[in-house]
Amino acid sequence: SKQNVAEQISQILGGTFLNTMTPREVIEANERFYVFCTKTKVIGCIAIRMSKGTISHLVVKPEYRKLGIGKILVNKVIEVAREKGIKRLQTYIRRENKISKKLFRKMGFEKVGELGRSGIYGFELDNLD
Image (cartoon, rainbow, N blue to C red):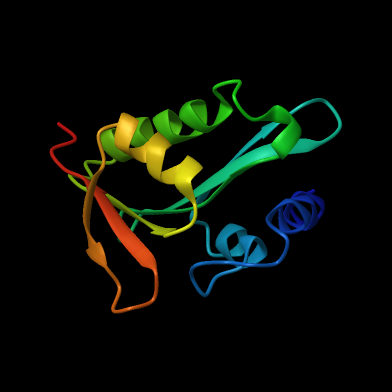
C-alpha cells in the first residue's frame, strides 16, 4: 500500500529531509516518487516535483550502495522529465554529502551555488532535449 511504502521510505531516510515534504506528502500530492525494491522491502527511492523539476529524497540503503542503484533512480527521473517536456532539473545537496555530489556530477549536473550559508548546494542539469 502507499502508506506502507511511505513508512518504509521514512525509515530509510531517517526522518530528515532537505525540503518541507515528507515521502508520504510527496505520494499524496501525486508527485512522482520512484522506489527500487526487492520483493519484500524498499532499498532505494527518489522523488521529483514535476511542477518545478526538483529532484529530492534520493537514498539507497547503505548495504545496497555501490551497485548502481542511485544511478538507475536518477536516470529514471531524467527519462520521465524528458517525456514530460521538462528542460531543466535541479536538486539540493548538503555540503557533507560527498556521495550524492559525486553521483550528480557524474550524471552531468553542475553546481550552481549555495543556499545562503546553509551548507546546502544547488545542482542543475540543463537542456534535457
